[in-house]
Image (tube, rainbow, N blue to C red):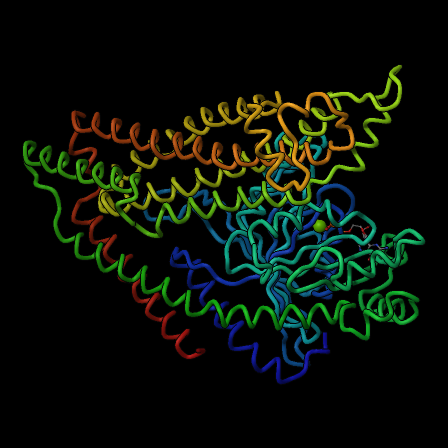
Amino acid sequence: MGELNDRLKEDIRPLIDLIDTLRSKGVQKGLDLALPTIVVIGDQSSGKSSVLEALAGVALPRGTGMVTRCPLELKLRTAKDGIDWTATLSYKQMNVVSGQNHSPYILETITFRDPLLVEQHVKTAQNELAGEGAGISDELITLEIRSPDVCDLTLIDLPGITRVPVQGQPPDIGNQIKTLIMKFIRRPETLILVVVPCNIDIATTEALQMAQNVDLEGTRTIAVLTKPDLIDRGTEKGVLATAQNKKIRLHKGYIMVKCRGQQQIDENISLEEALEMERVFFKKHKHFRRLLTDNKATISTLAKELTENLVDHIKKSLPLLDDEIRKQLREIRKELNRIKDGPPQDPQGARQFLIKTLTGFNDKIKLLSSGDLIITDNLFTQLRKEYKKWSDQLNKRKSSFNHEARVKEQITRSRGRELAGFSSYRVFEMILQDHVDQFKDPAFILLRTIKEIIIRQFCAVSNECFQSYPALLRITRNKINHIQSSQQIKAEERIQEQFQMEKMIFTQDDIYFNSLNENEIERFSEVQLPFCDVATKYTEMLKAYNGIMVKRMSDHVPMLAQHFMLKKAADHLRNDMLTLMNEADVHQILSGSSDDSRRQRRDLLQSRRDSLNMAMEEISKCV
Ligand code: GDP
Ligand code: MG
């Protein structure tokens, strides 16, 4: 991408390098820093890999079916002219040599100079991480490409969204993929590149909805429209309106690109040739050529837009990152202080010490679950944010809940021997039942998110209380995970029930009439409604009922989640911890706190502290 002007490059370089340094430091030292990146999401075969390879100027594995099975981090780095194309592929692998002094992972690294080998190497790495079948894994594969012809960008390609598992795939593959995608796009530091083909109905694109759900203001979502050469005749105007941001409005709008189609790949059209063909395509296109003049088309426009956004985003993220580092430093200092005192050696004293430690933990869990203790981030703020997203989702579809056409169609379709004008309740019920069904997946996703948040918070408490006692820490973490999983099953059952009940379509008459009359000029009365002809009012009636359902669900699901995953889970955990107090082998529970391991822990903490300090220094150079 030679299009980027030099000024931009000079701006970008130090920032991208900074993020790179922080990332590699972070990986080495086991720090968990949230760093800005671009993530590519979309349905399977929407053209994600095609867009990526056009940006990268390198062929990526692709074909039919699921090709991307692990998150693939693509680091593009401009090299000086005259430097040959070089790629380095790396991923974590389980260390076969195990033992205390060995890390559980080793970093597998392969360097090569032939672009044609990318596909094969990525495939091999995916097979190592996700198995030979069609499963997926969350482990990251990193492919760094240095070449004079690429721009400075880091992107992550994710598996495409599928609904129907193919042979060899787990039945919940759809959910696994969505969870994986959520994990990446939920982070506020992530820019989301949503890839949508022009030839499908964009309103129903799940990827776009997911992005909108996590990025409510739309400030970090960029939409790419692919396959403009494959649209049906006569739909050009509609597609153009979408591309001009006149239909589904996005804060950052859309960019249309044309990548290589299957035929062009079969004909060995190079990526460079394809870029030229893309330009000609837009120039000659009767409808889309104005996108070219508006800077809303072509891969190179996209590259430029992305880089600008990323730089902007990095600049915005730096102060947050700085805060985060300071917070981690405070934690480390606290622990370093704590590490000085260990448990007494005599049995009596040791048990007393254990009881004190466990009681301290239980008290904290109690305070945490009642909102009176803030460990890392405020738990209830996080929960509330998720609840709000859930209710936004319900409400968003409420405003788009307009079924006039469906009502008509259904009435026509279900009409039997009756004379015109006599319509059936079945239609009403069916439409609502379909509508309710849509929320099942989001409800389960909400529950999983809540679970993750709570696990993180509970683990933070145990880290704080038991940091110097690895055995105790391990026992507690296992308990936390175990309790959360069994609570999740219970909550899922209840949510399932809730949905079954919602499908009965029920509410009290007075509630229904209130809702019906809420936004109506013409009032319905309890006396008159049962006797008048209401088929023409179906739309209003559907809306009224939907409003009631939305209210009910928007409270009920979060209440269930909170009751099972937080309140009950905290009770169970505290009970479980009490039983530990009577455990025979106090020394075993408190083991690992020998002078040696304390020293090791202290060294680790000190080296983390040093690299955090260094990271902070690096950041201060850039802001
Ligand atoms: P992914 O599953 O989202 O990574 O999708 P791919 O990038 O593998 O693309 C799926 C298919 O669509 C491939 O056969 C591509 O060649 C084709 N394709 C992608 N973009 C375009 C485009 O702009 N025009 C045409 N005609 N085909 C495209
Ligand atoms: Mg792909």
